[in-house]
Length: 243
Image (cartoon, rainbow, N blue to C red; front, side, top):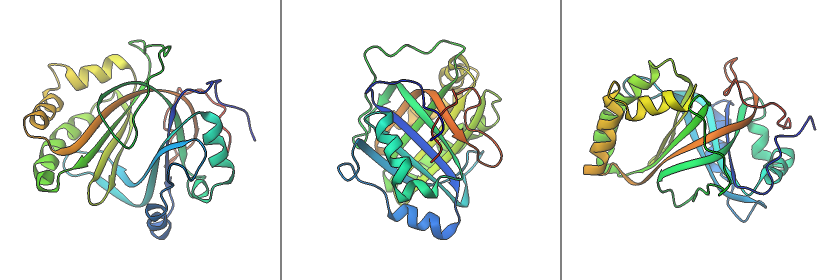
């Protein structure tokens, strides 16, 4: 086992795993989502198809899969990576470990805990954002139209250094985005020069697209592997154990 991640104690963490595994394996991954209680230290897991954030509809990549999971601590994730069959599917891709910094909304499957002693992100610090939604099917069309405008702006923003669209039909939708700095992420999300995201949020508040939704901000503190020849978080600390 090569190295160790940063010392984390027993604070809740979230991991995201992305890999090109082929159509058959992706189908198996969608069917084999681990359940809390079945794995020590696992609080939540969601498997999904994934692709690129772009203007218009998300561009899903056939055979590319994602796993989003919440854990009691790094030790629980280490055990999963060492001996769980699902971890093997993602061994050829990339993973990132995330410290929760803040959440707007709620996600009952993964109640995010921000540690009382968590250090707030500096304005120039890299941040990762997860958006999670359980879509109201009758509002899927309006959601896709509104989201496509905001996604186009995000995809064109040089401050967003990596991203992925997430989907598990029929209801789960989400995004992963890596931002060069908290300041630039905030400017996109709330600034006057990028109104499309604010308009989408306002439309959701007026008539919700989702049964529940969450916008979660994280500090990436360790990363491993590549996807399409690129790392997910260039400045994350090295030293995550190789699965």
